Length: 496
Image 1 (cartoon, rainbow, N blue to C red):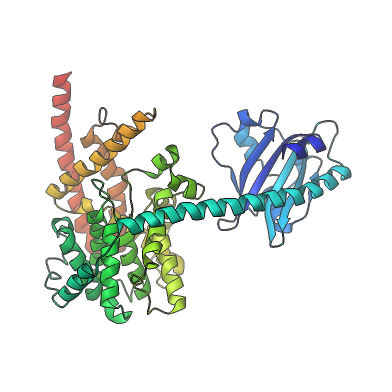
Image 2 (cartoon, rainbow, N blue to C red):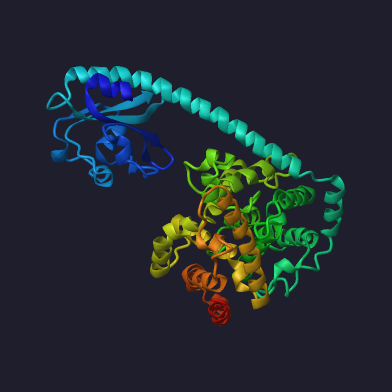
């Protein structure tokens, strides 16, 4: 791009790659006068692929030479507003391969002239061919590196998850006795964390059966058991994001599906199956650190997924797929090909929805559906409800009794403080909640309940009024934390 800028005598050049999945143009290269200064601190500039001059060129595949940018109806001023750069004239050209447009390049502000010439257009067209070859080579190399990274991660999972046939046979034999699935287990008051890991695996088999999945989808019991045990072993052992958490989230999804009779009403049976499996697998191979830490530490996960966002959630889905592709673990083996593809799409969307950032992005949509009324014939309503449900499942530890909630806080902050220690060792200042020397846990918990947890369950109880007792429970926990904060503040003041 630097050579193209020099050859055409442009003040600045930029390269946008087309993200077909998101239908956006992503700025990848900026070069020219004060480019580094203008774009300092800006991680990504994304524009809709249908907007602006670059968007028009991406859609039409035709070159565009504009002598006065600000009077052109297609000019997208947001980038100038973001960077402080003043665009006078533009030469914008597509970068294509045999399959269509790969991206768009823009040359801005002809230095020795009022606008770009026809000769400049010819240079740009020739350069676009070279640029396409370079991009294709770069993308191919990235695919090779990503495949190698995924292979290392999958091999790590395989080494970590070695399921013996004895385990499978033992748990399969226990499936004839599912006394653990009783009215107590089906209660929202039940604390799934009280079960041992083995009991939890047994109970998971029971939930598959009690929800009708085994009969409806003809799930082979030994395949189901091998899948469940492999998922259990696919969880690492950080203080909070471990198998017990995965099981607890799956249990809450079971409670909602069973007690609210969601399948056949608000959700399809395939959506119910997808929700339950996604809940069980949603934090597979969690390392006890956040997505932002993966990016800061330049981990393999960040290299694979940071450009797409939701680093950990994408990894959790990839690990779910790795288990399903492991011999003897594909519980969907008797599902039709079309249903299998649909189910995997549901599972991916549901796991990605466990990123709280995703929840806040669609919060407006959730409220809109609640206000308008849920329409079971509307696919978007299904998607939005599934996202809200899995968020409520992920936060479900806050719905149990005070003893459990208090213990959960200990586990979460142990995990947070471990990350904070790592960040300090890297020379990075951790946030308050990650800093064991600064965190005021009662206040942090009150804020968490007020800003995240209570709004989620109020929305959920808006859809399902019979869940209003859960909101009452969380409000009681908030009052308990307020009492603890008073004591904490008194002790803090005395120590000072």
